[in-house]
Image 1 (cartoon, rainbow over the protein chains, first blue to last red):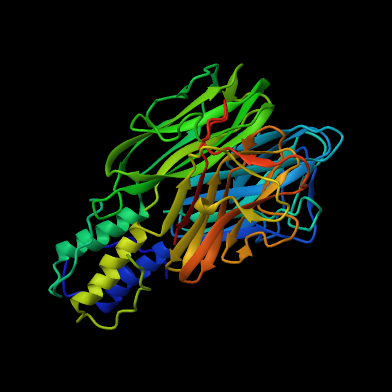
Image 2: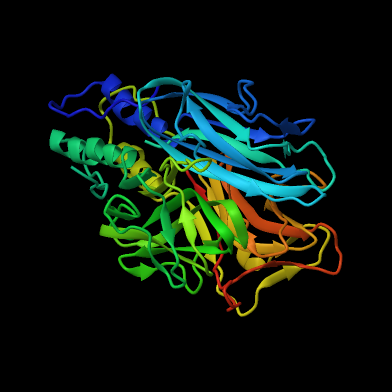
Length: 173
Length: 175
Length: 168
């Protein structure tokens, strides 16, 4: 069951299977499109220290989400919080089926300044990936830092930093 | 082809034209709503020194999207979502403010929808919000910005060393 | 207009009420999903010293009737939190972050900055829910958290929006 491109009706008497495909299945496809959401809630926070592009966490179902689409556009969203102990820039990108969509520095970047103490950084985006073919697609969050370490909070109970972020993908047409 | 207010059916002698209009076309209208998207990729980054709100780039398809809004499906007004996902930069400590215009009318009064906070270096400039009660028809959505002082830069994947980032600005009727 | 779970058609001798429910009403339900939205334009900004989660005020709380499915919850706002603060969303009696010391968005800067977020809540059963934006001051010290509310603060006169929409 999924989306079926609505047919041109050329004859009435129509069949039961027509009604089910064209009405039932298409409404359900619109009401409940392919989606995946990762609520970032783990037992420990995550240290991100690579100065070249790397997966944030390539574990399937985490910052690596797969959906089977009907063909069309997909929205990808992120909202997370982290901290640094030294000033740095963190860059983020999305890899779709193994291909990064951003520039040399990705799709979004943030400078987080720091004194000697932990400084918090919020980072997020909402991105539309257009015209994906019908089928299974993998969306991975990738990062790099300019220097030092960005600690990604993951709802791990860290004092004053028990933040539960989200990473998600959803077919929107 | 487009949206037609769903009819109230009064008998079961259904004509194929009715199924095409009320089922086929309306399903397609839901599946592919009015939508304008700009992948912010240019040969140079955008910059401003304006301390009053001004257009980033009013070229249709860039920071201006004119879309055909259906509305609520029954002749009434509808909702359109507006999203900016970008990275901004300043070499001095400033603020950058954003607002959205609908048909030339600011949808965010005073100092706009949001600002970056006082910063230097790079900062995310991301927001998504609904504009409600948008009348059916052709509607123009435009992004504007201003700075508190100095020069604000919106990165446009222009190859700037260590700042080669690709943002997005889009508007979409959300059913 | 309410959503009705699409039936499996078993014969073609349908009556008009079937077509109205299954086609007309469901198209309208998809076209006009439940949505709540508030844009602040207040005389004074919001502030809190509370070290436990509390509502910003009644305008930021919606009674929301869902057909069942997914919700998208969003905030576009600017705030400051010298002693840092936290934002979360309460759905009936459960906060989304559902932890004691954190939330879904931090207010951390000594100067006013963007504290926007977008959040999915998936698979909500059909029903009516109370959805409320909440916040707290994490340190409870001498400095409050302040959210700009279109109150005329010089160079910070922005109007925050909080919204909830059923998107499937």
